[in-house]
Amino acid sequence: MSIKKLYIYCISFFCCNLFAINGFINIGHTQTEKDWDFMPNISNSFKSSETSYVDLLIHSENFGLKISSSDFLLALERLVHPKKLDLSAQSNDIEFLYLFDNQYKNFSVNFGEQLSDDQFIDCYTFSTITVGSCDEARINISSDKEKYNQLDENIIMISGENKSIRLNYNSIINNPIFYEFNIFLEFVENNFDWVSPVEEITLNKESFTYNLNFKGEKLGDIVDQSLSILPQRNKWNSIVLGASTASYFNLHESIYLFLIPTIIIVEQDGYLQLSNIPKYNFKLRTGFVFAQENIEISIFGEYFMKNLYGFEHISFNQRSEHHFSDNFGSLGIELKYSF
Image 1 (cartoon, rainbow, N blue to C red):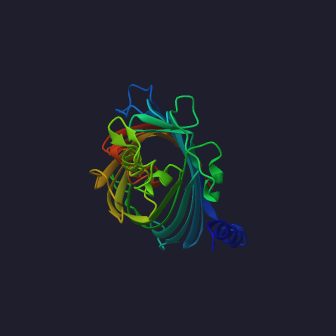
Image 2: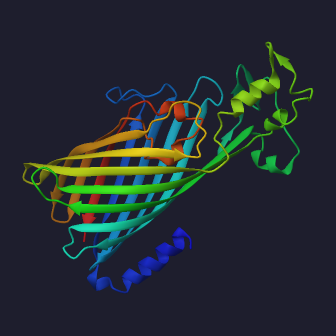
Image 3: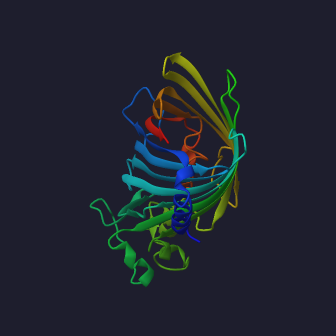
């Protein structure tokens, strides 16, 4: 059964019991710009990043349903082709909760899927030679094979998606230091693919094109080396074990300072790494929340020790893995209405 069908079924179920429903709707947005000097150091190719999200939680007695949707956009600018490259991805999650009788603890199972828009690249620089349809291209390579028809005048298309299942245990402690504690285990199946007629050069190492000499190197060897850093086509799994706490400190009447640290341990199963990749990541969300009756408004900042590694799975593959030793940060705002 697809995620969308589960949405419809579960919402229908809860609507039949509307008189007993409680919950909240949460809307938020985070953003980072390269020009923000007060943020952690960002790689030279980074331009901007933003995420918009909405969460809807409804629960009745011991059972709950949470539906989440988000849009993630990452913009990059480089000195060589592709000089501009945007990653746009949409996520949809559905989470089933069991609330223990005292309502202070719950266990949940989350099913998620994330799909990126296809990335079309008109020109690509292999070592020092640019191939494609742009003005700076030295050569253009095409093929009449049907699988390349979708490229139009582009030289490469990259696609990506992932599906996940997450087990989560949450407990409200409500002591003076820690208000909430959360622990989770997540399994993610990552699936990337790419299409390019340039690959045809590497299929026959005895061909004239493969053995063309360019600045002392065979053209085929140059292409082979460059294609090796494109996302692997074989699926691999990410296993994430994490824990977080939430603390709130009253500053004045309805204004609170909050701290939400999250630490995760990440294992990549079946991933063909090209360099060292992190084994863990740490995220800290901190800011101020104005809470009154059914409304909460939060302004916050987020800090990531190892970039978005383990938090935005669609952003990680062989092309990007060398960026995940850098810090990352963002600013955000959130509106929550409880009913």
